[in-house]
Image 1 (cartoon, rainbow, N blue to C red):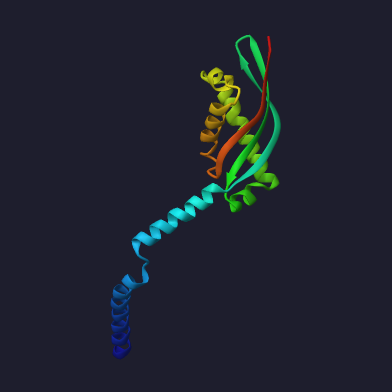
Image 2: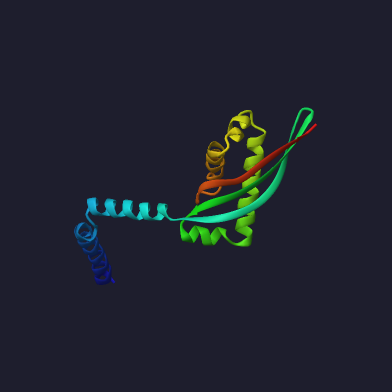
Length: 153
C-alpha cells in the first residue's frame, strides 16, 4: 500500500512539473494569435444577413391626441449561426415584438420629433439598433424602409 501511495504521489508531482515546463511550448506566440483573432473578428463582422420584419402598426397616446404609425423595417444580423438561430418562427416573432416595443417607447419619448423628422431616418435607425442590441446582441443595424404617421384628435 505504501508503494502504491508513493508511486501515485511521485507520478502526480512529475506530471505537474513536466506540464508546467512544456506548457510554454504549446501556447501560440502572442503577436500571431492576437492578429489572427482580429482578422477572424473582422471577417465575421463584415458579413450581415438581412431579416425582413415586414410592416407593422402601433399607436401612441398623448393628451387629446392619438397617433397611429405604420412602419416597415428590416434588421441586419451578424453571423450565419445567429441568423439561422433567429430566423425561425419563434425567434423572428420575438425580434419583431422587441422592435415594435422599442419603437413605441421611442415614439412616447420627448426627443421623438427629432428622431422621426429626418427623411432618411438615420438617427431613428441608430437609436432602435442601440436599444435593441441589449436584448439581441447579434443585431448590427436596423433599416427603416417606410414610416408613416397619422394623427387623430
